[in-house]
Image 1 (cartoon, rainbow, N blue to C red):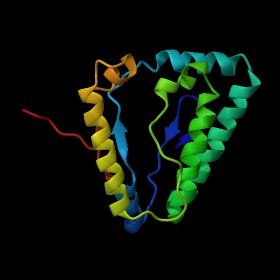
Image 2: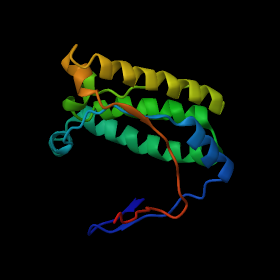
Image 3: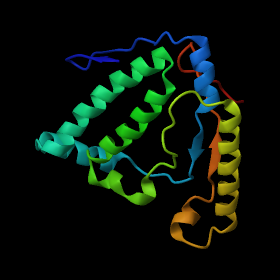
Image 4: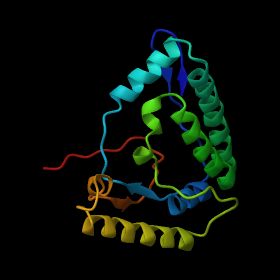
Length: 171
């Protein structure tokens, strides 16, 4: 994405090799915690921090921008270890942009980044582990507010399309 003055934006699709897309789809595990929140307050705080020229949030935004370029390069090269490391690093930088995103109950569920290629079988074991986690949180939903807010947790599959956004009408 390229951003210009007067709210002009150009979006160019990445030309990612099929083997890279297949590996990403097989390796990425999405886990919906069931927690929903409004991002408006976080965005408002980020805006205040940046317009107030707070140094730490501004520096974090510069790091996020650099990380985005590095992630693009890592994906195009099929360097999944670097990509995973940058995802984790960017999450920590994002937390610096607004205090609201630092709440521990809002942190993403993730493991430590792995170097090198991961077999889809290992991703399958992670998915099964998360399925059992979501089942146990549903069973113990009355135990605590954090657990009860995750009672609808579930694992989602990841898929990419070369055609852009897709949608359909359900009659």
